[in-house]
Length: 151
Image (tube, rainbow, N blue to C red; front, top):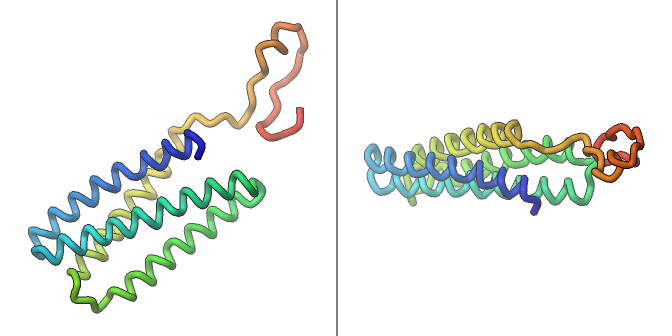
């Protein structure tokens, strides 16, 4: 995993975990132990699906860079469909409070997506490769080329 992808994963996981802690506390006050279990499970599901998405997207970028953008869009659709399936599977469960589960799943997902957007905006990833030091000192007037293009 590249360092910027690991940083993105960390920048997303920390706020999501904090949101999960708040959701567990609020749910335990409002719905008791079942609410706390539902909130913890919802946060864990959201974090797992979203982290899996970051890892899959990173692997796609490494192997198939030409599919990166379309894979990102497809991945978000699949993640949200899987979450809808999880919500429908657990809609009548008696293991935990389903409202706490659903609201914490929603909150954790929204926080993850917002943190991921913020992390990508703050990342300083070169899209133009800077000139090498020896090319600048040799007097060659070579322009910087876009990253990934042949020099």
